Image (cartoon, rainbow, N blue to C red):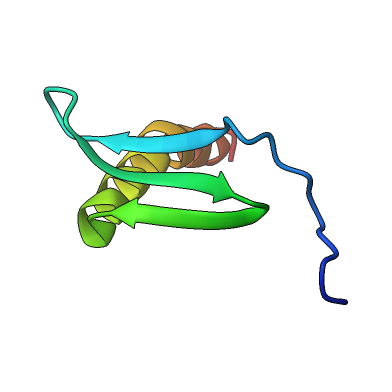
Length: 69
């Protein structure tokens, strides 16, 4: 990709925030001058993200597909 070209023009206020129980923030993905950035505790944030993704989104999808077999 040529210098200065972007695939996406992000909204500057768009963030993904990872919080553990009690609402304490442990990580944040955010845009900074067109560059996606992360700050916080990477391993703890990744665990929260995958726990949510796998348990809340993917598990029900897989169970539904398997029940139709």
